[in-house]
Image 1: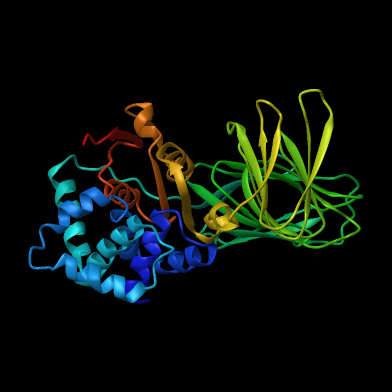
Image 2: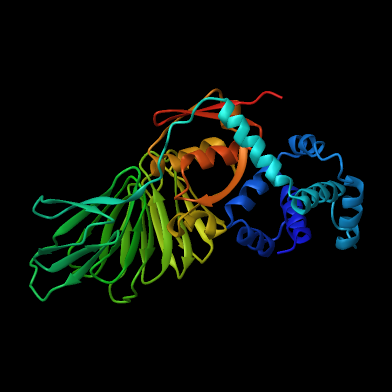
Length: 390
């Protein structure tokens, strides 16, 4: 993609003029780690302009003039957008990102040595109906036989093969994914589930009866096998989700004040009880999310960009204009870290981030510090975030 186009998209996002189609175009470009670092550096316009002074041989006015000619007519864009885009184009065109990255590296090497914080990996424990505990990981292939099903584990996934044995009562297995882990499971009905860190999933070895009911504490992404005669129900601590066949994500950690279900495809019905004990239901359409507040028992239905809430399943962390507190707390389970903020002011600073989940945490620190608004250090698995004074 041409630098002029990227500069234009970045400027539009900074000024709040980016369309959904343009945001997807920009996200495609951000697949490159070097592009991602440059993108974050451009969000601190004041620091960027100071760095650009090092390039005295570059005619900034000429670069801006060239940009204005390429994007004409520009009456619908704010003057601020034009100014930012001209700066962005200059950086993209002359390779100033090299200077920015080298400067960042120099700052890190002169400061405190960062502890190594590794990303998570495929690992879990499976507790069978009889109490037997099976350790699961990405590298070991094994087969477990129990009445009603054969369980195969390979490459971070377990798969249930239903047998012809008669099961007189429902027998449940429990998949427990720890902090710093994730796992996949194909349930006896063919439903595929991606299970995130610090999550528990309880389900029957063989579905029977009028419904397919499972229990979830934590976060999971579902691709439900269609069966109109046997609805699929996910029970959480605060609410239930009922579907026939659809794709959706549920984040329902017990310590999250607000839990949410995000629908990607199909249709689901969410049911919950308010403070008076009255049952309420909401029907979700694709690209809708229901947010349930565990404190006041209120639910809110809204339209969202599902990519933000399901990207973890595709191996990415995605945050849009969220506080650094929300961002780091969202990553804490995966990296198994504890977060400490110098004050609430720094915790409330907002950022946008789109980065691979397998990136070492030092990479996350580098990207956030490129904004020159926070300083991050690590002590073991404790992350300390301080504010950078102007």
